Image 1 (tube, rainbow, N blue to C red):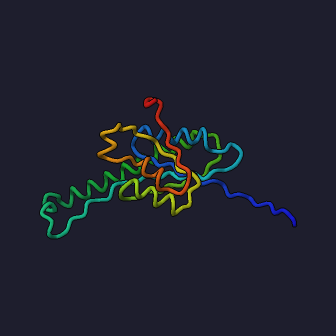
Image 2: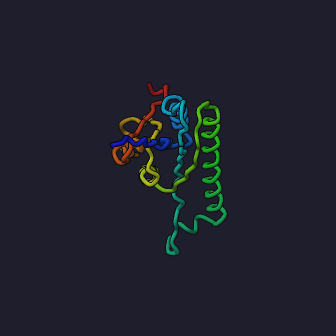
Image 3: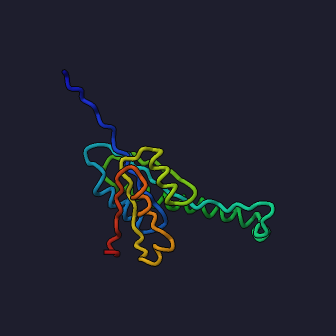
Length: 165
């Protein structure tokens, strides 16, 4: 029986990014430690923005928000996406390795959306920063990284920012 050379496809690494220094540090750490120097890697920058508020015609709170306010909030969300992605792409450009960078923007609850997208695109690894909220804040808000580590099907690397160590 003859051996067949199967070329493994280049790995797909997803880095969840947001406005925080922790997520940008996780991206830098990923580029320095996980990206191969010898082959091209596929890096996906994933940002999840909160869902826009939905108001029904029977909702009294709707009258508190004029169309201008809603448009301004949506513009702010789009501006935030662009700002975060520009910061992340600037970090990627500093890397000396060969990487293909893709941007994905999700909308909704971050922990669920990250898990869904990582599964949908069949990522090989998920990299996330750690906000290190502490016991009480984590108990109330929940931890996105803990949730993702328990629910995605690929390895998860949670990177702590040096200021947390």
